[in-house]
Each structure stands twice: as structure tokens, then as C-alpha cells.
Amino acid sequence: MTRKLLPTLPRFEPENMDHTATKCFKECPRKYFYRMVLGRTSPAGKWESVFAWGSAIHKFLEVLYETGDAGAATQQGLTIFRAPSNPSFEFQTKERLLVNFAKLMNMYKEETNNAVIRVEAIEQPFNMVFADGISIGGRFDQLIRWNGRTWIRDWKTTSKQIQYFKQGLEPNDQAIRYIYAASCLQHGVDENGYPNRVIDGVLFTAIYNTKTVGPEIQGIPSSRTLMQVKKWVDEQVFIHKQMKACREEDVWPMHEVSCSFCD
Image (cartoon, rainbow, N blue to C red):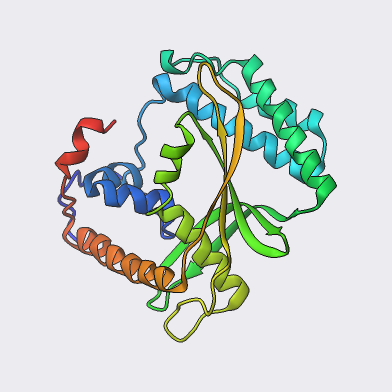
């Protein structure tokens, strides 16, 4: 391949396509080139504390469900916390974070007592290969048994009202990617690389906070049929063919509809 775009810079494109990389390419091939191929990231700036808030809650939950030790989970979560750097998220204080931890601890205790949800794996990575050799991957927040059925649980911190949050669950590459991977691992695949059956779905658990409301915790199940999963696999193969064409020609078109929102 003859490099045409910024040819002197080193390239770091991942071989295993996860949800973040695929979503970035669908937003804009040029953005994908900058971020995933050149490995450039935008300065955290005013978003640093917002990202840290979500990461702190994820770490708290990871340690809590692994150890059952709320004190250790709190300490590890607090090491990630950053004071609010975005005026729109000034409510994301350490005090509010601790209130979130306490409410999540209560949820954990309730789950442990009623045994409706049993956690089988935490922060579980997966790698899958489509029938044509395309490699994809990701990481489950939790693999659970909910009322005896297999689900994936994914934690989401959000300031969107729940009705708007739900609107983002279909289409949703992350949800169907998780369902595809867990279904293949549990039920096997056919000669075309499709799962033989699908698991029940993804239980998105939204942890909702705004300036005046929260924390509120709500579980939102999202399922897909086998036909939907098969169609998604076909679409992934098509998207990866587009990626291959961009690499071979070293042409990464800009999608101008995304430019005004691009970092």
C-alpha cells in the first residue's frame, strides 16, 4: 500500500475491531483514521471529570461484585474521581459520588439476598472470528443469570432522562455485539458463522444523575431476535470491506455531517 494521507506518521490500527472502533468508522472514516489508525486522541479538557465519574462508578461496581467489600470498592472508585471540570456537570461532586456508591451497595445487598440475579463473570473480555476471518472483540461488564436465564449486564452512567436513554438502545451496536458474542459462546455457531440460538439479551442498568435528581437506578432490558443478529453480522462484514477499501487506497473520506460535533 502506498501511503497518501500523512504518510510519515506511524500507524497503530487495532487488528481486533471492537464497538468503539466500529462506531467511530461509521461516524466518519477520517475520524477513524485519526483516532484508530494514527492513535491520536483529543485533549480531555472539560470532559475529563465526566469520563472519570463514569469510570469511578464502574470501578466501584467491579470491585464490589468481585469482593463484596464496599470499603475497598469505595477507595478504588475515589482514586479515579476528578473534581468537576465541566460547568454542565458541576453536580458530579465527591459527595454525590458517595451517595451513588451507597445506593449501588444497597442494590448489591438486595440482589445477594433475593438471588434473582447471579453474577457469573465480571469484566469478561471476548474475541470472536466471523466465518470470513474478520476478528471482533469487546468486554462484558457482567455475565449474569437472571431468573435462571443468561443475560449480559452493562452499567451506564447517564444524565439523559430514561425515556430518551431507551431510544438509544435500538439500533445499538454494543447491545447486539454482546448478544452475538454471548450467544456464540453459549450455543455455538452454524456453518455461516451465525449463532445457533440467541441469549435473552442485555440488561442495561442506567445510573441517572442530574443537578436536581439522582441517583436513580433503573434496569432496562434490550433483546434481539436471531434474524436481527444474522443481519448485524452481514452488516459488520460489509463495514469491514469498506474499512479494507480505505486501507488499500489510503483514502479516508470525511463525513461532513459529523464535522461540527467533532473534537
